[in-house]
Image (cartoon, rainbow, N blue to C red; front, side, top):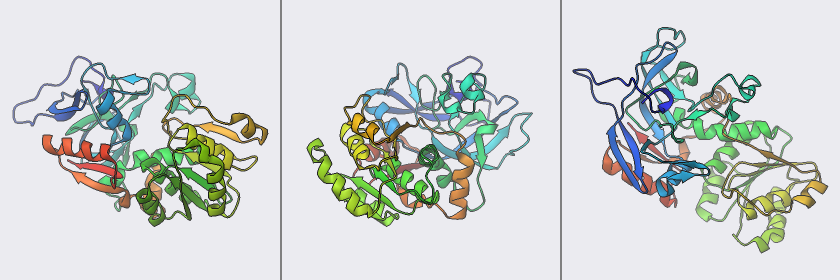
Length: 367
């Protein structure tokens, strides 16, 4: 298995005295196995990283339950995981910025750097992107991985490896806030208080949003959002007929106009609510991808010049995420609710815990 996890020849055999690299493989629906994972030697600009903290993402659970996520289909066994941090074990001959022993957070996507989108700086949209645990690319829930050095970001001394792994989900919120131009004069509505909704809320606060209201169907998630600093909360239903009434409820909770709404769920109901609640001239940013197609009141929103913005993953977010965490502007530690080790039993329990939801926000492996 080569850099970026693509299947290729030339993988390194285990030398005498070396431990065998093991990884969590998705081998079928609801079937995960810890099996050997051969790595290449690092290229001149690569590093070999010993994984220490790996979080479970909703996309990992989708792959486990259905062997697909959106248009990405798992056709052969795949190493899972992409939210990760670890310790450098080996550096390539041309790597000047990292040394063995450095603690790093890994940005999981390797773009081509040759296409127009990459050259324009929008490398997250690169059609040749090789992204951890997105078929056919293997992920990072393994003892070790090989990765480009420029996608490994050194952790400040006061940032833990778990916090480093949390830079990946936090990056989604940071990128969304950048796309929507959130600032000190932007009142923010967040639809959905799951992990991505919560990191989007934290990012919006760090960007200076003076007032944030978060909406969900679940009382426990709303209580967590309140503890993490939401100014207002609103419990809603799943019934599309309730949108008008709930918009009134949201406006009351906000106590001011809604300048930017983030739909972190991506359903007809949540997007309809966001479009209806946002003020004339405001923005709605679609973050969640619950449905690939939606029926929403787009014409009334357009008549109020509400801009609809999409996001896909992130770009150039790790340095800012690490600075937010280092400085204390964002505390991601309360989001980590469950921790598991690296054994077959614990891997299965961890994914079951994440899939169940309930009081689980972020489930983290400590390797």
